[in-house]
Image (cartoon, rainbow, N blue to C red; front, top):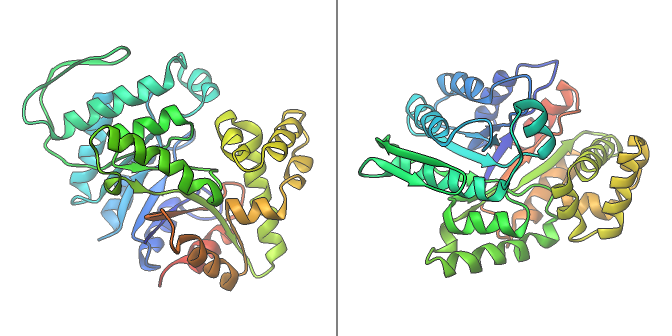
Length: 324
């Protein structure tokens, strides 16, 4: 089992420095998200120049704001500057972010993801010029780039998981309870076999929110906020949580929608904390990583530090869970 980290952007520390430190702590991959405020691609290029062996990944770039050709060039360039260490993580993002920030219509997101990933993989590795006439995406006579970069997809619902099964090299689930992860991947595996693909070749790399502190109650409080934010503000995430906790997921979403963030966090039960993330003292957290990954479908666990924590807590969490 491989251990990576999704580095948050916090006020007190440089994202770049935290990522560089992750290599010294023994993580085998470092990932950056991208929503607003910073380009993960530029930051990952800087990280690539300051590190030696750690893989660098986008987690995630959305399939609406960059064309398939730009995404392919981005992946190929990151792979070149990092000497073959790049992983391209893609996803649909959300209707709100796509339409409000990028001015794009959030139409047929699953189909767009399917065609984008298909085109990107062809542009990266095809032997001849690529032409593709899809329902929502197309290219004509584009020369391939000659870089074999793994492409992961952040899929939650069954339609999007079919995209993973048919095309992607890896799966990036988030807010899928540990108790539901194996059955969720069973669907991917079944669909992959129907498409004549070997499901063992699809890397399962879930985001696992984690907070480590000597005061376990402090760590649990921060994790509750993270779960409440996602279950409350994103329909796909709410459905993922609801696969195991339908009543609680609905109540959290209602409280969040009403503007009561505190109540939403309080509605996250201890059982949900244990099933959706890692929180506790350094020793407790390391034991949880071991138990979550043992006899699991997880190939690469991605420690995800909640964005709302302060820099000291983020750094402490990354340090405490590092293999070194």
